[in-house]
Amino acid sequence: MALNYTVPAIDRAIRVLELLSTSAQGMSLAQLAVQTKVPKSTMFRILYTLQQNFIIVEDRDRRLFTLGMKLLDWGNAALAKIDLKTIAHPHLVTLAHETRESFYLGLLDHDEVILVDHVDTPEIWKMVTRLGLRSPFHCTAIGLILASDMKSEQVDVMIERHGLKKYTPKTITNEAKLKKRLEEVKKLGYAVADGEYKPDLCAVAVPILDHSRRVAASLMTAIPSDRMNRDRNLVPNLVAVLKREAALISKRLGFSV
Image (tube, rainbow, N blue to C red):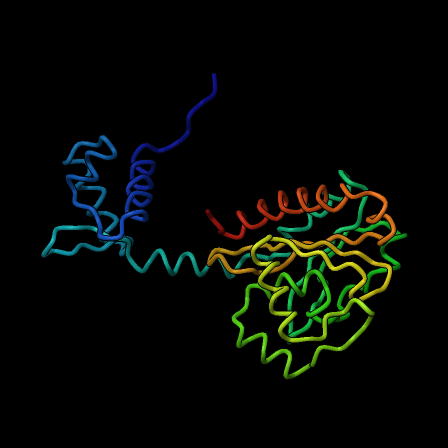
């Protein structure tokens, strides 16, 4: 029989905080007691303790309790300790072992894509830029994912700074077409860049979301274009596994549906 080492009073306090986090207006002592099935006298002590530690606050006029700023301080401290690369790397390993493909973690830095981690196979690694080197945002799968989460004005600024250089015959160099493409990427939840940056390379990327529901990074794989053309199920299958692992990474970054 499994031993239960939990502390009931702490469990109840956590339940109170969870309830308050879902209430826009706040909740009364009586409401919390009913929801948690805790006696009012016990609930009073829980609320008093939380209030004394600035974890919750009371609106005395309405007799309602809401979450306090102490939780925001704790949340910011936790976010500051998050290491995206450390969190994501095991998921890259899982993907590589499962599919025998190469996988990459990318960010946008100074308007350009930069790869910060990878788990690769030698034949693919030769085709993809090395870690730390920069790539354009407008014709790479990671860049399209990251730019799709930006406001139109932000995209305008990046275009003004760097232009839309043509790398291959497939590269989008028209601003209107690029913005339409970004809208499609946003709607689909993934990007496929086939021969747009490197002629024989097809890259597939999905977003990684953070606690604020913004795109924090992108998870990507790259395959030779001729393989993609031979197997029409390859890209959909890769999108599925990429989305699965990206969802797990996003959850660890604080994202919730």
